[in-house]
Amino acid sequence: MDVSTAFKPTAGDIDRALVIRNLRKEYRPGNPVLKDVSLTVAGRGMTAIIGPSGTGKSTLVRCINRLVDPTSGEIHFRGHDMARLGGRELRVARRRMGMVFQEYNLVERLSVIENVLCGRLGYVAVWRAWMRKFPARDVDRAFHLLDAVGLGDFATQRADQLSGGQRQRVGIARALMQEPDLVLADEPTSSLDPKTSVEIMELIARRAGERGIPVIVNIHNVDLARRFADRIVGMSKGEIVFDGPPRTLQDAHLLQIYGGEGWLQ
Amino acid sequence: MTDVSAPSPPSAPARRVAFPPNWPARIAFAALALYVVYACSVLDITWARFVAGFGHGARFLSRMFPPNFAHDKLELLYSGMTESLQIAIIATVAGVLLSLPLGLMAARNLSPLPLAWTARALIALFRTFHPVIIAILFVKAVGFGALAGMLALIVASLGFISKLVAEAVEEMSMHQVEAVRATGAPFLSLVIMGVLPQVMPRFIGFSAYQLDSNLRNSALVGLVGGGGIGATLFTAFQRFDYDFVLTIVLAIIGIVMIGEILSGWMRRLFQ
Image (cartoon, rainbow over all chains, first blue to last red; front, side, top):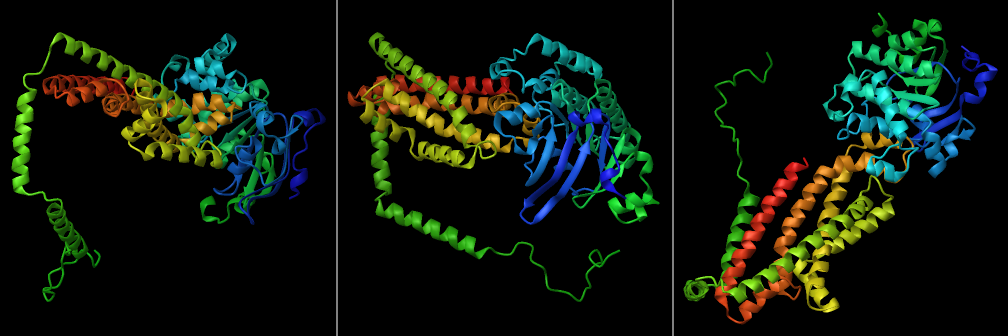
């Protein structure tokens, strides 16, 4: 199939879109994990990236907010090439990208509300973080977001006392706390049971949807991807091998993405 | 059923050895024992020398009793002890405050490698010498008194705590740090919200231990001219005031025990 024409953003989406061009990442020289990937993600809806482990999905998402430095290529978002930014400019760009992690990555010894307020660290002065003197507006929003993810009563509990699903809800609240223009989710459900996984995906889709924030989610559960994403990108061996709406994803594509066939029966 | 669990045939009489003799270890122990005997003979440590030493010790002890609680002596004890406490507390506070940035700089997962290695070299330098030797250097450099003792203990605290802080930082979860970094936090905010919560309990533990150890060492640095109770103790020895020596020793034991209780209590409080 023709990858480049599978999805056409409308003109209004262009300035809010994420445009990745020829993105390449080699952890060891000559051994690319991402092989010149190009991808345009519209400024709305959920895009799911599926593919086997070790295929570069996580690297791709981490290049977008530069937790991983790409070897070459461009990542255009809101007028900046993320791949070229550094120092303060990078931090200012980063604070508009919320991220949800597979292992939740909460600061275990901080309280739930402190973890949510971590989402404001890109905005507030260092002394405010040190004294825990966050602006009242931020604190109100943090409580509001905790209510929205159903953890209003847990605000002052330490993060390490929560269950996996609860932690991920805090992770989502932290990401939304950044007032992001884009949410990146790296395997947000892989450490959760099936029921909680669905709840978490629902929560991400609903909370981002109502704010009109585009979501890019790495996920290896194809059913969840089909159910929640507006668009599915299939990766295999560092390249995009499928790109289209969920209804067009056929078994033949899955074979191409994951290889083998026994597992499809 | 596998072959392993099958009973061995009766035609295999050779008994298997579970604990084969470790000849290199046996030889090493024998050599060590021989060397200890040889060293004793070279140093002329004989039974007769021991008996003579015990006689000395007994006379010394008898001159220590009863401890001297005379008013003027207690005043000396009090002023020496306060000075030692002040030296220990100031040195701990200053050492702890300085060791946090130094330890963070020395952590290879946070700071750029050249900076990390520079900080590590500095820490290694601070740790090279015993506080007493550092105190001798400072006494020569800044003169007799509390300042020299304090500086010596600051250096010792720095070496100890920063090394442990660096190790604690290197062992922390980078996942948590990564998440805070992803929010666009500036470096210091990242340290405050992502790093310190992870290392703080251990840091407080190290600091409490260092306070304890500075209390003990503050008496030591005084012996070489660093002020405090050590100086009082040294003078008492020089004047053969052995009964006052005993008073001082008892006071030091008391302070050290109180310090140990306090530091244990502090560690529990911040777990």
